[in-house]
Image 1 (cartoon, rainbow, N blue to C red):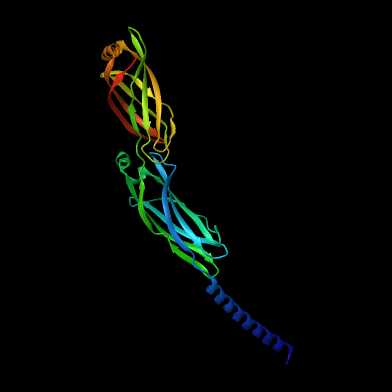
Image 2 (cartoon, rainbow, N blue to C red):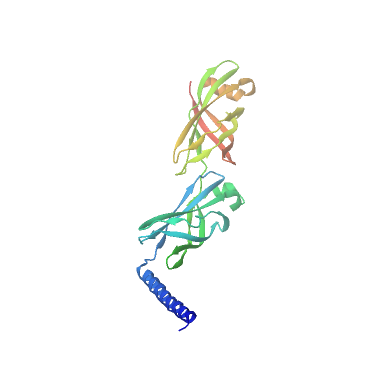
Length: 280
């Protein structure tokens, strides 16, 4: 047999053997490979304020195989109250551990003013509806497996903190003025920390304008926590005769604060009207 013919025959035999081997190997892999499972774990708020929040949808992929897998592709969209918002996704190529569960986090930043025309109305809701949709592709020895990411649910809408006066203390009083300390109690009605950039407003005592109170930046309020601040104010009796009468006689007087509370870049109206007991 000529040399060329022998070489071609040998290549043909080797090719058939290789194809047969690949088919056998693939069949063996299919038989040994265990399909991973993807399950929804939770939806949680992160970095929430009265202006926006990041909502993390957390999924868990369970890989029962003795070798790691990789994320191949993600197609993902996120909606709040029917409107699509900017959503992030895990990077392609992310390693998924062997014989265990890997957490996959899908973050979405929600700017509340983009969702509703009247923000104050939205912030009075207890919950807001979300919908996630898309697919997740996982690279495996038998090809890319696709998993659905469809999920609907609700998340907690950030609530405006509760603000109230405690008993004001008269520190110094003369014929013409009085220095009064006004304690404010600010309670975070959310289960998560909330930044409060400040509270400011015009103050009235017994119906008389007496000045402006401002807390400055209060930082982050702990989840379900309360912060106390004391704001001193000197009241000029010549400009506030009704306040002078109330402070000199002591006892109860109506105190009103009209202003705003600011969280990150968002301010919301704040109005307090309380009957408080002035103490010396």
